[in-house]
Image (cartoon, rainbow, N blue to C red; front, top):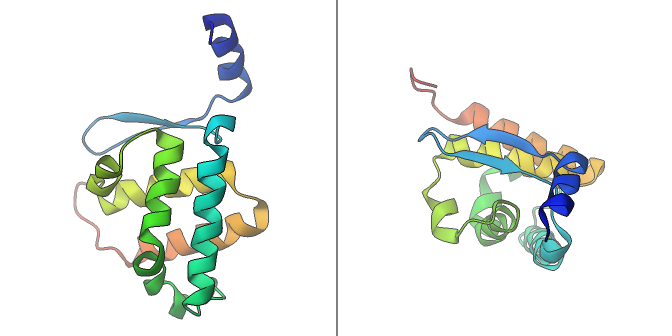
Length: 135
């Protein structure tokens, strides 16, 4: 892609930046057309796994602890598709950074109905995490 085209896309879809605890800056943008299949496959698989595990109402706090144990691979694939990073990179994120990035990805890439459910899940998980003095 030529630099003029890239600049136009940057203006249309600027993304949102976040600095990880280690100092690396990540820009989260809407899913690109080239990553759309991977993203949709991962989202579809995530919901199928949640459904088959009996997690039908992710707004119910009793359901939340099982989400990552049931669909961690899908969450990782979603994060890889958006960040362009490897599974090992995603796996090495701190819980706080991972949840923050996941929230940003959801904000930019999922419809309002699905977004609400996922963001509620991320908020509850974040609130259950112990905080450290440097947070």
